[in-house]
Image (cartoon, rainbow, N blue to C red):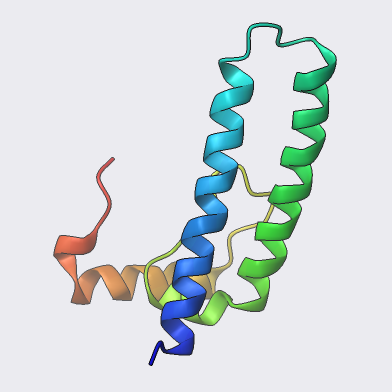
Amino acid sequence: MISFEYRILSEYKIKKAKIDTLSNSILSHTDPKGIEAKEALKFLDVLIDEIDKFYVAHSEILSNNGKRPHPSSRLPETKQWNENIESFYEKNPRRRPRK
């Protein structure tokens, strides 16, 4: 049986991958000022809004498992999230992401 926490973490990972894939395809597009790229940027904004809402809704679980908001997120960092993330990495030093 899949736990609720694992489901949230997996869904967050999928959402981040979608945003990264779309942003990479926009950057490598042959005509970056074309209609396709502009429409893709609009869709990217929708995806970023969606992941921000998801992070706010499940911030307790995500921050307790060392997950920060996506780098292109528009969310302001809170003190509680940073404390949860740092305590997670103190308990699990090998899981700290590379810089």
